[in-house]
Image (tube, rainbow, N blue to C red; front, side, top):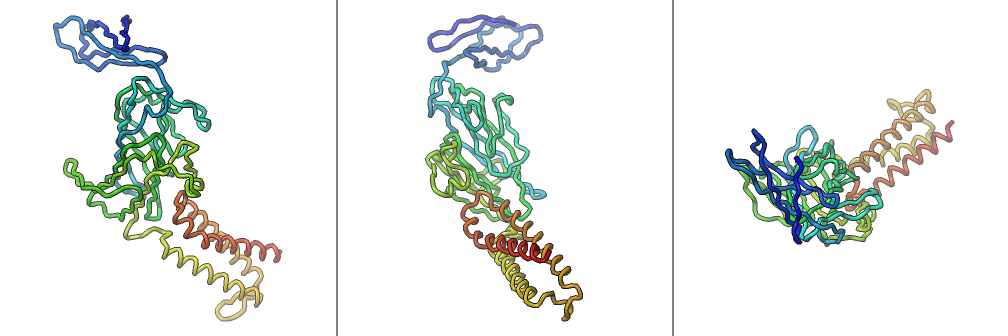
Length: 354
């Protein structure tokens, strides 16, 4: 059904609508300057004639500061099969009197209106709420909206999972669109150890029958960081990010594969291998049951190749788990260098023996 109406100077228009037979709900949509605006959904009353359906349209603007995230609540839901399930509730606000059309981003090559940071290695992302799904993209570690944002507020819900096989989850939340308030909520009976940076512990919150421990941070758009940490982690403000909260969850039963004690033991083991390696070079073979191997060259080559394979696997896992964690990266840097030096030494020896 096609309807006509003229708006006043404030963009307010009203459509007179007569519901068809059997229609119990009415909604009117109109397009202005490429943006679709809709009335509220109205339930009809049997026997009533026409309904006045108001719709307000707005001019367009790309002015900075119109759109921000009024509040973001991150709910840690559960950990099952090494997967951490998370649900975010966001209140998105346009405080102006014009529809925000966004800014062109050189990286994404389209106009971005909203960018919501997500932790690295997130999986199975989904978004629910009054948003055009065709205008939603996942770009790197963020949800990005292309949809134009009219004045007012709307609620969006994000859900995603993060995987870890080592009993430790590292959650960095870069801030894209300015974020006024962020809350982290974790069930009181959650047994994992929790470490939180850039958020303050507040009073517990009861929702239904669940008691949540709660942390809060405000005005996170000011956490712009041009330090080496920001540059190294790829979160520099020049690409639309600032450094946001950092959350670590550790299984008390495991403590994480690359906890400082565990890695120190691993490095000590590698050092012992290196010491043994110099013994092999000096004596031309390896010790087998207190005697000398009958084929020292072949056995030592095989052992060295196996050792190199183990080191490659260890370095890859270490890099994957430390991705974005500058503090731990600096702590483990000497150990990683030691491992890489050992790999080079093995390559030199294997090449020499060919």
